[in-house]
Image 1 (cartoon, rainbow, N blue to C red):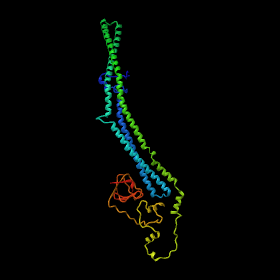
Image 2: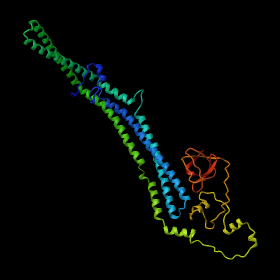
Image 3: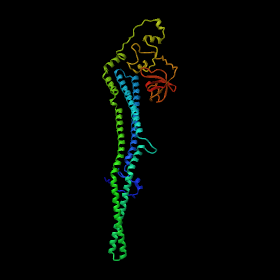
Length: 431
């Protein structure tokens, strides 16, 4: 059961126990690396939490970017000149982005909720702080110290005995060399030679004595080695068990992380792409062109001018009323986001007009009154208005909502005294 030890250069006193260090676990203070691993485990747990927190932030930023992009281009498609089945396909692209953003917001929620809370709970359960170090680190340090202290004392006695023996042996060899010189020197007196031989005799006795003591100390250490190995192994296995728990927790946490961020398994994502593909498959270019021709081109019916007999009653009516009657038009102005005037201006034949009316009285605008009870909403995201009649705001801004959200998701409100339109999904009601 002898332990192979590295050579040390020290005095051999018991005070040297705290100063010795080796990469070998069995040597004095060699267990420091094992104890340090406990501290490293706490640091690595913090790093894992930071890693997941930063990924959650990226998920949030990506989702916000997708939602902003989706709203911008949804609005552009609604207001723009695109028409027919291609318009529906373009809308499905913006819908996919919005649904993908929702998926990534869910990922962020799972990471910040389940994963980070789990890490926090696990660390609190496995690491308790004392004044200067973790309680688990202090316990491991104390356990190793308790086992190693009696063995270290024996080891230092061996080192001290070895040093004494080597010193005596060196002295003996020096005296033997000096005696050889004296014996070959004719000038050496009998008295000087006798004194040197007496020193040599004492040195031989001292060398034998220190050699025997060195061997005795070494035998004592050999007999203590097996108990030392057994007890140090017990303390080491305690640290191994703690590290096993940490590794198992990390593995489980990373598995959960993978399940959260792997959005390829989310049915919503698959459905979104399938909807785009379906919209593409359902497109009919020829039908769209024909409908456009019928409503805006050569297929339109024309009331060609005919001779009209003079009518005194009709001729006395105001010109505006005559036009309205002749065209069978409504006199009101629809202040909805998909209003008839906006659709006519965009050149889109499929939005905003019914079959009986195409030109309204564009000079009649009825503003909705400010509600009696002020409704306040807060912006959840930044928004930059794409048109002159839209409001621009930053996340956290407070607006006054003037009307209910229309069927296209738009609201009318006030911000800093300016009235305009804004997307209702970008705000939440302040209760």
